Amino acid sequence: MATRDEMSQSFGRAADAYEQGRPAYPAESVEWMLAPSRRAEPAVRVADVGAGTGKLTRTLVEAGAEVVAIDPDAEMLRALRAHVRGVPTYEGTAERLPLPDESVDAVVLGQAWHWVEPVAGCAEIGRVLRPGGVLGLVWNIRDESVPWVRRLTEIMRGSHAEQMLAAGDPPVAPPFTATERRQWRWSREMTRAALTSMVFSRSYLITADEDERARVDAEITDLFDEVGAVEDATIALPYVTSAYRSVAG
Image 1 (cartoon, one colour):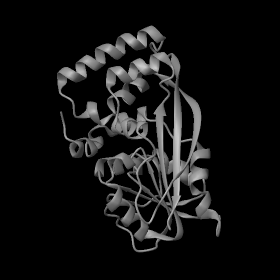
Image 2 (tube, rainbow, N blue to C red):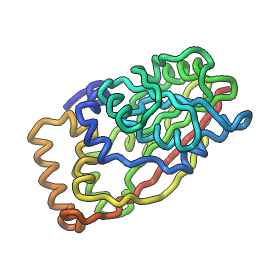
Image 3 (cartoon, helix red, strand yellow):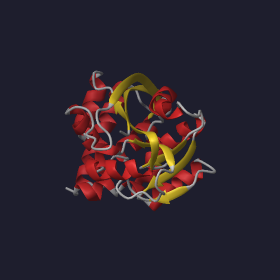
């Protein structure tokens, strides 16, 4: 099995699958995360860290934010630039941000905080935030209260994110203290092709050997047949979006 670091750096090898298979974020979740940073001015400058192919970036732009996108993987940033025009992109991580001191109003991470070392990450984010700036963390997690979705997770195995959130709120460190949390339930209509891309965009499977990938492919084929995700038909994949925010102290 690949190491945690290898998994965290694997996504560029599946950038196209990530773009097709991963969902965007509810606009309400983004507005809620940014709300504390809008108290002085409605327009805010936001760093999207671990931006990937730009799933969260797009929602931030639609919310009226001035966005800079940061990711450690050049291939993911290449895909982001193809889908989100006019957003500056830089290679970097939460622990090493290519930004000046006090240069942004908010730092947000979508599907990414579970890859971050929280003490170093929080210290670095605190450095680049302006006074009163906000740290926003958000995840789209499949709703496993639905039986077929729970079976899907059993087939492809739980993620680092799911394991972390099952244990409680995501860990933060100074200059941040406790986080606030909100949740939204929604669903996404997906074709069989999109569902398959979602499965194989996960780090565990990107880095898995061919035997494991073949096992998963065979089992999801049977599952998707059973639930009616055949040919161009769509099926609703339910999600729970969990967002967290914390203002720098």
